[in-house]
Image (tube, rainbow, N blue to C red):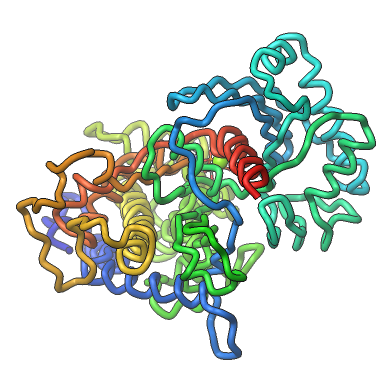
Length: 507
Ligand code: ADP
Ligand code: MG
């Protein structure tokens, strides 16, 4: 794909041109490479769904969520949602109005450093008291009374962004704390029970109905507004996805009457053995120096926490060859993780002739005081390479999940004119089963996406869509609809609580 890069920019030296051409080749994923990665992704999904054997690789955890079914926008009622994933605890009251519309009220509470290390019962008491304070606020209380159901217990959905193994929609044991939390008494225990006990201790009339991961929440929240949502995906600090699987394919599951269940793929860990991912020396260096070497390799090529660091590694390598900034770095640029992904967005957006906005970031944020126009052109080109590769790899995950649905899961039998393999020909004319027939929404596969990288990185969406079309064929634009789903941890958790209580009522 060097043709997109040629001709030789006028002021670049031969050595600069050669180095950048070689980087371009390394970071450019051809259509054939996308196809190969997609095939491997589907294989690893199915390995994850299969029962464990001594030989099997489980790069993709494919975690059953016990969320059976999806909302269609007709749901009604008021539910609480709780979001704990960092230094803020968010409590929300979500009122579903039944016509794809909803109302949301929320309050954030700061989780002090003390509480992040206190005994888990203290953390849970703090959560219970925060909920109590929230629901006793006058206007929230009025909303609750207005939309009350027969029961006076409020149902709550809990988005808990730490690793848990779930055994039911309302049961999950904490595997380990992350993100600076370390509360004794939690690891190995059921988070729902711990919270319910604290609510009871503090006389808060709330029932914890569902525990959900943020990707699942994203899928549910998007589904309320856009029925036929098949995937919920996050491209933010990290990356992950959830989708709808046929229960017969989930072999870890005891026999189930239900037809479909949402699976949390944990796709950040795709190909952690690096058998097929096109990792470069810059990716390997980042992985080695990260807090979790050897895992989440895919995430490290895609998400906001890492893209700036890959770029920094490349820039330093160019500096060391005296191909950039006349061979001089700055203490700031030498510091790991100093190059934020947001800088890449700003640099790629700069289309001025002299690239002065890029100079400003280099000088003000990174203390690189001497930079020529050629330097800035090179920096911009490097950002583009790293960002475009991330978008195209994001398309691989999305396309693989869609193909899984078409081949053996919930999208089978819909007659979508999409490519199932590289050789497939997709008919350009629509058959009786095609788009012009009947309800148009039946012929769209919705993907709900949350995350700043997808939302703000220039051309991320464009590159992702064009790679999806390369993999799935020319009809992709008509059939696969990517949309932004913002409040997975609020609206999505409330919907999970609704689904959980509906299921219990039906039992
Ligand atoms: P989270 O995933 O933690 O819920 P976000 O979706 O906001 O939060 O993603 C945060 C990540 O997005 C950070 O790693 C940050 O570097 C990156 N980011 C923030 N703003 C931008 C931007 N304008 N362009 C690209 N990346 C961004
Ligand atoms: Mg988020």
